[in-house]
Length: 238
Image (cartoon, rainbow, N blue to C red):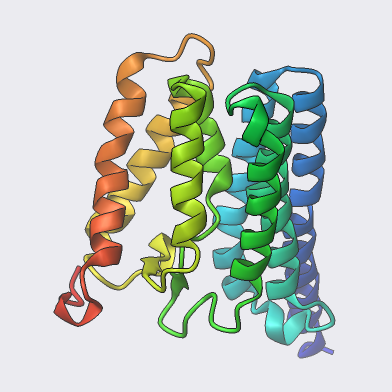
């Protein structure tokens, strides 16, 4: 009997992690409802919650060993379904319901994002064995938030979104920050700093400080540089 207790609690913990991941569907729905109500501050809140769940569930899944103790659910498939909802569908609905893109190309751009993201998510090597994303990793929610905060001309937004759609098909290996082995300590520090400042700034919307967006580009440039430099030139160092 004593051998069964730890297993029982491990099973509960593992299924609890799957449930935690599944709540991403709720935050996605709430974000969509906020968009239809034109309550962009609450949309931001629910998008942040969804990103936090996505950011922590992987580590929790490894800690709880869900593949062993809750193997009745495909955690990777569940994660992909919810990522498509929160990283693709929610921002597409935002694009359709706002005027951040020129009206003549609004629906076309939305459809293109849905299609290219479907391809990106279903590539057999979309996530490589060395923990990278192949091609632009469908950060459409981040793009939507930048559109909201920066309020650039609609045609400029369209140009950036077209570039990102093209980048889906360019086989660059983008780092997975939490599992990155190159300059790991620096990458994690900058990632957490980017997240903390970003969340703080977003929660100030519509009165967010102007410097927050521009400061965030320091991390964006670092992320792109670390992704674009050939991996064999990196030192696997802390």
